[in-house]
Length: 212
Image (cartoon, rainbow, N blue to C red; front, side, top):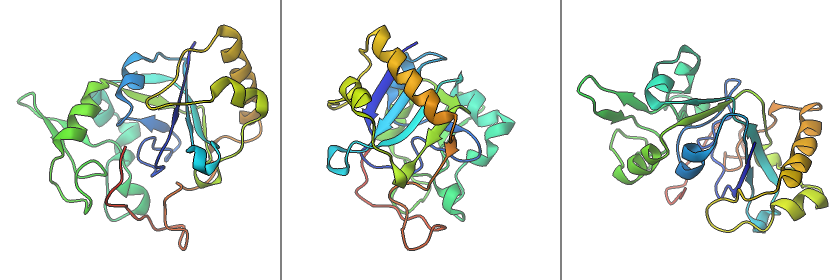
């Protein structure tokens, strides 16, 4: 079992997507999606300027192909719907076509106004990851990210660009004991994504210069 940790620079609810009872990572972080295994932990922290709080942690239960993710009945609700705040951050956006090509549906990875224009850069990076990570064993604090205890901070930090996965067996064990303690008290989605409009819990705004 491994631990993958990274800084989630902008928490939109898209990558990861913590809605509908599953935490999914279908876009961004291609190296983690490609190299991780079932049983591994993926952890996202807020930037240093926001205290390096724990935004989410998920234990990978499934690694699905984009084809399987698109067709799985469980994840039809994760297809993008611009008429719904939660629907806007749907990450099930890649449809396999009969000719072997793929359609990138409108989403946070097309253009800032959620039109159907394809973004080749995001398309290439998303597909480089090869898989969609799925977990029902997760906790997502979003805008209510919590501070990590000192012993866990010493293990995970500092984090540079990309992700960190070189942890000893003892360090991974300490992490697992800590997060299992969290999950016995609270799990799944605790709060809304960090950048959602704070004036209305049911609205979602997109920053046009958002980077992943």
